[in-house]
Length: 335
Image (cartoon, rainbow, N blue to C red):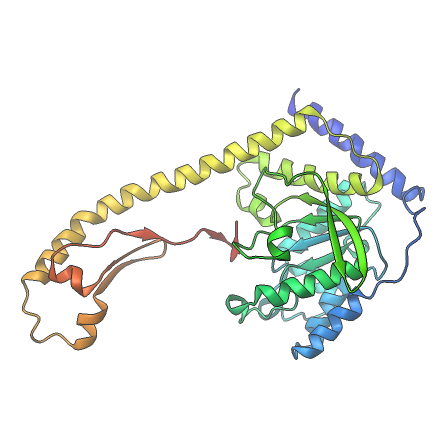
C-alpha cells in the first residue's frame, strides 16, 4: 500500500470520528460532573503555586465532566518561560507542544473537537520549571492517580516518557516510539472509586517536530492520536499498514540510536591522543606547587556532548579515564 493510500484510509477514519461526534452518537453515555479540576486547584494552593499557573492548568484540564480522552504530556508549558501571561489561550499559542496537540486534535476529529474540549494533564502537575529536576515522582504519581480517578476517562493518550520511575507514573508512560503497551484496560481504584481506562501510546509531539526529516514519526503521531479518538468514539479499525508504520518508526528510532553511538566513537578516539599527551605531560610535571583542590578534582576538558575528566589518581598514573556521553534530551524532555 502506498503512502497516499494510507493517508486516504486514515483521513476516512478521522472523518468518521468527526461525524460521530457532531451527530451525538458518542454522547449517549451519561456524563457526570468531575472533581479533577477542583483537586488540581487544591493541590496548587497546598504547594503555593501562583494563581495564574493554577488557572492555566485548570483550563487545560477542562472539561469538568467524566469520560472522554485525557492527553498526558510532560511539561506541556513551563511557568518560567511563558509566565502564563494572557491566560491559557495565550499559553497554547506560545507553546509549540500545545500548539501541535491542538492541531492534532482538530485534525483527528475532522474539526469536531478543539483542544479546549479535551483534558490535557501534565505527568508532573504544577511542577515549577526551576524545581523540575527536584520533582518527587511519588507525589506526582499520587496526584495524577487522583485526577484520573475523578475524571474517569475512557482513553488515556500517553505522550510522555519520564525515565525509570516506579508506580503509576511508570505505568502511564509510553514504552518508546513505535511501541505499544499490551492492549488491555488499566484498573484504577482510589477511595472506593473503581474505574477502568484504555491507554493508547504515542510520544512527545516535539520529537516528531525535532526529527521532521523522518516523515514516519509525524505520520505515526497522527496515527496514534487518531486511534485514541477512534477508540474513544467507536470508529476505529486497525489495519495491517498501521502495524508496518509502527515497525518502520521503531526501526528508524533504533537506527538513530545506533548512529548516535557510532558518531560518538570517533569523537572519543580523536581526543584519546590529546588526553594521553596531556596526562603524560602532567604526570611528568612537579605537583609540589599544585593546590589541594587540583589534586582532588583533576582536569576536565571538552564541552556539550563530550566531556573528558581525568581524576588526579589517573593523572598520577598517566592514564586517562574513558570518556562518557551524557543522556539524550530534546528541548529538555527525555525521549
